[in-house]
Length: 404
Length: 225
Image (cartoon, rainbow over all chains, first blue to last red):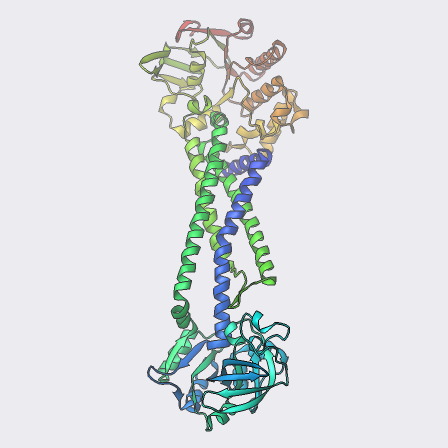
C-alpha cells in the first residue's frame, strides 16, 4: 500500500467521521475515554496508596535501610562504633539510632500508654522530615533533657470529649504543659511539651519523642545501644546498594531495605492490588474491544453496498479496509486524549483532596510510563477491534455486498 | 475492444439451476454506444457485470482490449477497473459523506499517474461539462435525482476510461432527466470516442444506441456482433 492509497484511506476515514453519524462518533470516543480512565484510575489509586505508605514508612519509620538486632539479640550494641562505620560508607547520607521505652503519660486526669522514642535530633533531621511537621512549638535539640515532642494524636483536642475520641489522647495538651512520664523501669519524671507535630502517619502521630541524652538519664547509664538504626541513602544510591555495602562492610546486624520490609509486611496486600489491577485492566480492554468491534461491524454492515460501489469503481480492498481501520485509530486517539485529560483532572482533584484514612492518605499516583503503557494497550485493542470487521467486509465478493 | 466467448453464468437456487447467461458471444468495437436490452430477467445486468469485472462467469472467456480478464488476479481486476473501466449505476451509488467534487475526484485520487493538481483540474472540467460546477461543495442529499446521476456519470468518466458501463442509469429518473442523461452519454460518446455499454429496458432509449444487443432467457437473440 502506497502513500497515495493511504492518503485516500485517511481522506475517506476523516470524511466519514466528520460527516457521518456524529452521535455515534461522539459516543464511541466517550466510551474509549471512560475505558481508559477505568484502566488507569484503579491502578493509579492503588499505586498512590502504596506510594503513600512507602513514603511514610521511609520518612517516619525505617528510612531507606533498617539495621536491626540479629535474631536472638534485643539491642544493637556497640552503637557508636556501628554508627561511625555506617556513616562513613559510600552512599549513606546519615544513620540514626532509635531507642523506645514503653511509658505511661499523665496529664491532669488523663493517663495514656505510649512508646517514648529516643532519637538524636540533629542526625534524625537527615533521615526523617518529622522536624518539618511541627504544628506547634519547636523540634528537639541534641542536648535537650526534660522536654518532649508528641504527635497530634497523643496531644489530643480539648474540644473533643474523652468518650467521643477515636483514639485515646491526653485531651488537648499545649506547648509548655507539664506531662508526667512513668517508664516501664519505674523511672518517673515531669517533662515540658516542647512541640506537637502532625504527619498523617498514624504510628508516628501516636508517638512521643525525646532525646538520646534524656533517655540516658532514664536508663541511668550511657546509651551505647539501640533498638534499631535507620539509614538514609544519598540521592542516586539505591537501597539495595546500601544494603549490600553494609553487609560487605561487615555490619553483622539484620539489614533490610524498605522494599524487603514492604514485601514482608504488605506483600499480600500488594499482591491483591496487583490482581485487582489486572482484572480491571482486562475488563476495560475487553469492553473497549467489544464496543469498537460492534461499532465498526455495524458501520461496515450498514456500508456494505457502499463498500461494493467503492470496489466497483476501482478502490482497492486494502484502501477500504484501512479507511475503516483509520476511523477506529482516530476515534481511539481522541478517546485516549480525553481519557488522559479526565485522568489528569482526577489526579489534580485528588492531589487537592486526597483520600484520608487514619492509617494513610493517598492521591492518584500516575506516571508518564503508566499513561503511555495503558494508551498503547488500549490503542492496540482498538486497532484489532476496528480492523477485523473492516477486513472481513472489504474482502467480500463485490456482487454479494452490492446486493446487500 | 470487448469480446466474449461462450459466456455462461449459472446460479444454483436450491435444487434449481438458473442459467442467467447461456453461451453469450458478443463483440463490441471501440467507440460504439451499445445498448443491452431485453425483458426483465433476461440476463442484461448479469452480462454487464461480467463485462465490467464485477462478477465471475461460470464458464467462457471475456477479452477486453486484448486482455483475457479471467486470468487477472483480484488486485489486477481492481486496477483494470480503476484505469480502464467506468461505471454508472441505477441508484447513483455516490458516497454520502463526500461532496460532489470529492465523489467525482475519488477514482482519480487513486491513480498513480495523476497529481493532485491534475485530478482537481480534471474534476472541475468535468463538473463544468455536466453543469454542476456551482454544486461542487454540495452533499448527495442536497441534489436532485438527475443531478446525482450526472455526478455519478462524471465520476465514471473522470479517469477517461476506455469503456463506460451503465446499468439502467435512467431507471429512477423522469423522462426529462433521462433524456438529459442520455444526451450526456451521447456527447461523451461523440466527443471523446468513448465506448459505452448501457443496459436499458426502455424502448425509446434505442434511438441513442449505435447497436442493440437483445437478450432473452440468457441468450442473445439479436445484435451480438
